[in-house]
Image (cartoon, rainbow, N blue to C red; front, side):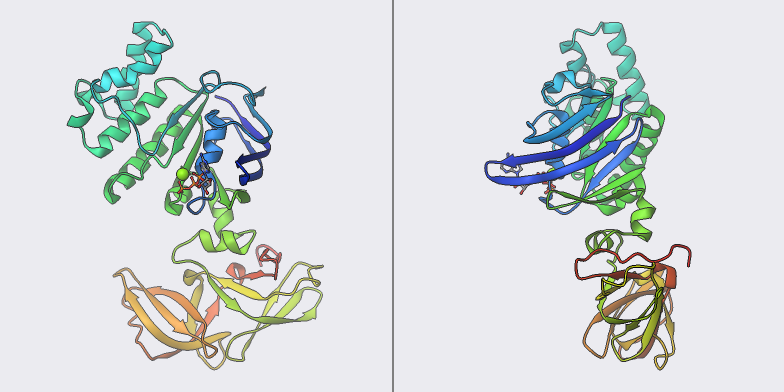
Length: 364
Ligand SMILES: Nc1ncnc2c1ncn2[C@@H]1O[C@H](COP(=O)(O)OP(=O)(O)OP(=O)(O)O)[C@@H](O)[C@H]1O
Ligand SMILES: [Mg+2]
């Protein structure tokens, strides 16, 4: 077990900088998930932690030891890759034993570690099989087993579920969550699936173009995104963004001029006056239907998607913007109906021209 500290970490390939100064502290036993769009630098950052790539700038400590120049084998980490390469000619048992044998661990200790990992991962009946005799999910569990038998200080996983089908992903996700709680090993997990990030993480790190956009507990990011990028990335369907203008009413209130001519007064923190709100953000699940005459948002339903337990209505505002609202299943939304929408006040976000969230008082 170890904590992990990154200070100003940078990585360039040639002249292209792909990790642009990351500061991050990961505590003992914490499960941290890196999430972000393809190419944002998640795998690179993980490989920097593993020591598989040299850092271009900054400093890194694992368990208090500066590891900038420490080779991967000396860092006390185990890594599970997206394409888990098992040795095809070795059994599950031999695959799991391989790293420990190389490290000259005694056979009794190896056997104990494998039996324990096999129990946790339900691999006991499969230990004598070859990889080709396993399903994709079973192979992935072997790859995870191979990593945990080494009893690492830090466990790194790069999209370990991406080769699995939907049902197996959910099942393996739950297994990983259970396993991590039980082992209490500091873990860094990379995914571009925000559901995995939300369900697994103690702390989510949102990366975008080599920059850390926000880091915090999953629900903190959901309820209080620091900027428009995080607001749009976390949550599905994505948060609605409406172009608005705003006038100051007093030191703590902005009056938003909504599409269609109605207004909405929102409390903001004192002293944000210099930054004008130009985008209002509201999630589909935080809107309710109301009278179009008075509701802050009004429009006409253009499309309806029915999922059984819920419905999504795509509402077109008079100025041509689109707002998605999540309704209960059986709400019977009809195309062409004129509706009004009221945003839940404490879940309404304002963003300035720099795309940063304009601070609003919490618990309003
Ligand atoms: N060895 C390399 N040489 C040059 N460029 C690289 C190298 N490895 C990665 N890159 C570039 O660095 C950027 C970040 O890549 P990285 O693999 O970290 O992205 P990612 O966030 O893991 O994406 P994905 O979700 O697709 O796996 C990309 O633009 C990629 O093309
Ligand atoms: Mg990657």
